[in-house]
Image (cartoon, helix red, strand yellow):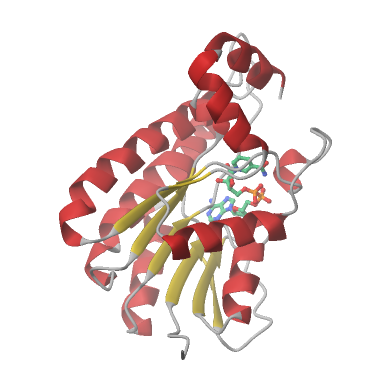
Length: 237
Ligand SMILES: NC(=O)c1ccc[n+]([C@@H]2O[C@H](COP(=O)([O-])OP(=O)(O)OC[C@H]3O[C@@H](n4cnc5c(N)ncnc54)[C@H](OP(=O)(O)O)[C@@H]3O)[C@@H](O)[C@H]2O)c1
């Protein structure tokens, strides 16, 4: 059977999980808009790189304009861009640091999901939000990050309810520790970004509502019976 090419938007596409997603989708022939602040690499002609700061409304508007000009409609939106700040709540915190983390990790996936709704190709299209295990229990050293991921997890479930009548799938991705810049110098037995991307691509293709490969699946199962133990484990991650 002939493969039908899809139009895909990936945020946080210059490195890590996002770059691996862009490369894998492009390698199977899909058209990809790859977004980050620094211009993502376009190793193939079916990758359209876009520089946009998604922590700002101007950056979000820039992406929406680019999709309008692209004129292809969107099959899959992957809200992957994220930052994680270590924050000591007992010390001085620059307000802009908090604003940016909330704007990128929580507000931008919400705003993009809504702004790109008119471009989604209706039934069969998919919105993917990348959250985290710290949505279950906070990582105390990254309190704002944990709060944004818990918020995004909640929004993802609400969006799924509202989209169910329209046939638009909404997927939550909960990565285990993946070997990217975000986890440099911590964790062990990390998943490669390529394996993480492959799990997301397979999950979306199979119509999964949750993609939680490797240790994430195990931690989520354990959390049903031993939430206190999981909370202590995540506090040390
Ligand atoms: N790695 C893990 O173990 C892990 C675990 C759980 C969840 N996650 C989640 O998975 C997602 C990807 O993580 P990762 O590990 O691949 O991160 P990463 O390697 O640090 O890459 C983050 C990506 O986001 C982009 N980005 C940062 N600020 C941006 C902004 N203001 N506007 C647009 N793009 C921006 C970065 O590009 P520029 O700097 O060029 O903008 C980069 O492409 C994140 O949402 C993260 O929270 C990761």
